Length: 280
Image (cartoon, rainbow, N blue to C red; front, side, top):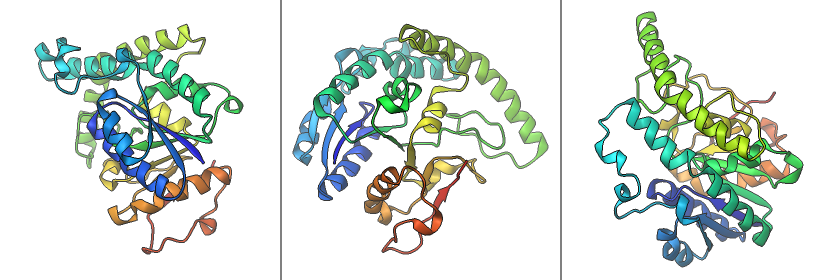
């Protein structure tokens, strides 16, 4: 199959993508990576094809502050978090989306994969399912999903174990919503309106995980704060040695139309796979 992998142009996102790409190519699939120009040589050396993101959505890995000088002066806190998400992930959506559409027209892939922070996938996920290939997202950091204790994401808060701690998390979440989520929602919905799409009611990273045809994550630490997670996608919490099986299982899931039952899952030669499937 032909597979396009769209990845945020940063090492922490591209490195997992390269591992996935190598596994897919070993299995005989054709892979084209769509990411930053700084990674062109590494991607082509791996045997994958390469398509560059537009300069307006690319990152300067040598001097990241040259493009975003305000990040140098803002003190640590919620305002800095908002600006980072806005500049690196929200403002890049139009260029990411437009460039990805060009790549899809050229490659005509069977599946599109992308890391869960590559928000240029959102317009496709919000559009008609019949007009796009299946989209598989993979996690490279935390799991972008509402925590059971109400704590906001990105802050690294420990899971609340008492009512008092839940109250503290609720106060932090309210401030986080006012300073981070609401301004980002206005910015994001402005871009979506320009593309003829309705506003989002949930944060963009959470929406991307929810709408992806399949989602998997390769590090169980990402489940921090999600002890009783249930949602409709496929979520993998796997030991490192199980990594080679992940893309094959995802592809089989897509081919099955997302209707795997637990007894239909492929056997794993390494033993029990901690695989969670929730059906709606």
